[in-house]
Image 1: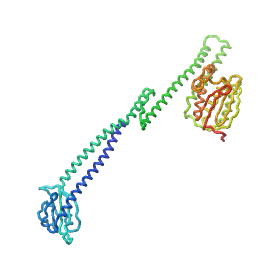
Image 2: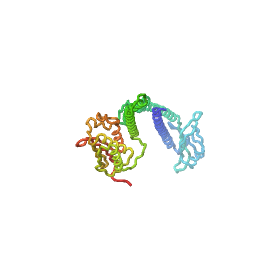
Image 3: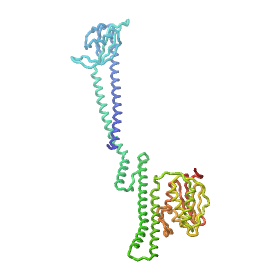
Image 4: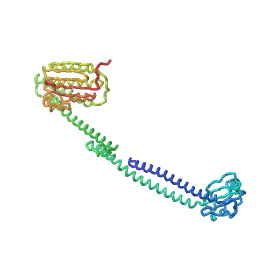
Length: 446
């Protein structure tokens, strides 16, 4: 059963219950009112009975009166032949007070339902000398109640029908945005392309749902585009060293005689290309797991990590002078392995651009790691792009690498709630500032 049908049935059901309660209330209120009018008429006619002239009971325009003596003998014309039963006998004897009741009474050779008022008749001394039974036939009252009941039933059925139609119309209008969302989701599931959007009209819950849905589609589209570019760029970057490796292997396996020097050169090329591919694959894996929850955060000493990586950098770039100006004890709650990779990428980038005889200054203060080289600096057109995946400036294309190192630094910084900034340093060279904000605090932990 669809949501639209359920809403229609709920609306019809609620209206049906409300109308039924209202109709029942109206019926019983009107019934009570009609019976009150009958009872008032019966009581007034009973008061008109003359206790000093019981021999002439007479009749009234709307009611009939039957009078009995205390011993049960009828007085005057026994017009309606009300039976002198035990209840009437108790009233005539003064044992009970008067009462109203519905009873079957004779009428023109048959019987019908009538309303009776039985009341004692007192003499001037307060003694019960008889009983009066005032009767009104309820045919007219019952017909009025029957008509009222029919009208109320028809009104209730009409109200339920109108409620069902109105509920259908309202549910159609209300669920129209939901149907559009559903249709869009089904088309996206079928085509795999989250490029379409749904109308966002209104500021109600459905309008906010449509806005959130479009935001989700935008994020999904951007994620898919990023994934496609990532796969395309990764394939392109992997193709280059693979092609070179394959070519060198084919040469080594060929029939061409190679001298020791040529063979050594080919093997060196294979070794270099395999190392580059290994580094590229490691970078791709680091980016692929960025933002995933595959490892838990843990506290570690960032200052010790920086010092360890600095020793590796000195071994990797022995022709570069590495200077650690100030390394403050700093505790970080995060991912040590990923942070180590990010710090190494910053040092490696600085070492490559410094060249032989260059120098790199490193400092760690107030939760911020600064790495400054004395290379050519960063061109203004390149500065906004240096942290993009696979981006390599014109000057960097002659150097080894795939353009993933600084993008990994940004991913790691964001994973720790921090930022990384690239800028040109005063006096030449580039300055990279890795700030960890709330993830870092000064001091050591036991």
